[in-house]
Amino acid sequence: MKKKAVVLANGAFPTHHIPLAELENADLIVCCDGAVNKLDAAGFMADIIVGDLDSVQGHLKEKYTGKMFHSSDQETNDLTKAVNWCINHEIAEVVILGATGLRDDHMIGNVFLLPTYVGHIAVSMLTDHGVFTPIVASEQFNSYVGQQVSLFSSHPDVIITTENLKYPVKNQKFSMLWQGTLNESTSNCFTLNIEGGCLIVFQKY
Amino acid sequence: MKKKAVVLANGAFPTHHIPLAELENADLIVCCDGAVNKLDAAGFMADIIVGDLDSVQGHLKEKYTGKMFHSSDQETNDLTKAVNWCINHEIAEVVILGATGLRDDHMIGNVFLLPTYVGHIAVSMLTDHGVFTPIVASEQFNSYVGQQVSLFSSHPDVIITTENLKYPVKNQKFSMLWQGTLNESTSNCFTLNIEGGCLIVFQKY
Image (cartoon, rainbow over the protein chains, first blue to last red):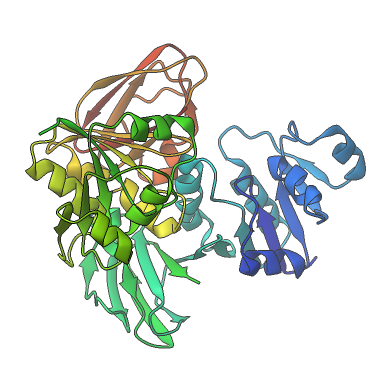
């Protein structure tokens, strides 16, 4: 089994060249149920379709015979079903695309599901504007001077210290989610030290 | 001074007829700095432009002479500057448009700023997909059978009880933000009882 997969969720289909390049170069495309119609229309082939399969168009059900994994668990959304499929098939890394851009509540839900995947699989989420990466330990990020960076705690008790960000943070908690937004890299890398939970890092392209 | 205002933020300009109708019927349009170029191009007139005014195009600076409020506070974003202008001018209610649809981190930041406005002014945020409303006490919402509803706590300690939602919640806390998503109204109204903080309610149109 291949070790890196692209997971396509059922938000807006990517238009930016960075997420599109991930699709074009993917070893394995794991497609959420409702997204396969868009994926196929864009000229890509899914390797596996995951979900309750209700919304797959008739001619695609035929085309993808043998490549559909039925999961009707009411407790998880389609994105989590697709990520779980990857975890259960020994994929080491997933890049999530199409998780934003349509319903605002789905977008927020999808971003804040990232902390639940950490520790099970390496994960990032690419949108048309930037990349979300969840971390649970200290980490250094490649960057560039002036890159826009926002930090979202999974829980108000997460303690954060930054290096090479324009508005430095030292052993600080964000009691509200907007408090970590609108920061900026001052170098070709920045470092985040965190304790007590998960931090979701957004880097604008 | 008029008592209800539309605040236009600098995300994607609305395309859905519901937010557009708010613009068309607005008594007062308060426009964030960077959004005035889009607003003007769409054929609307701002009553006041709020921000550091750096990004207002030259010919618009002339057109809006006397209608610009300069605020360069580094601690608040443009949306909060515009809402604060409304609070300081005895506006009773604001409807926020254009706060989503471009940078994902701005969108999350803007949605989770709503709890900071509650108590100062009545506020809702209309996107191309639905409406966000922050509440700090029990409230009944007009709805319809099957309306998609998501609930986001401003803090994990908010205690929530629901009536007339498909997946009922009783004296429950959401320790993670995705846990209140993907609910559904079962009636022409639903009720939310909350304690201990602010709940942001999303209703799909």
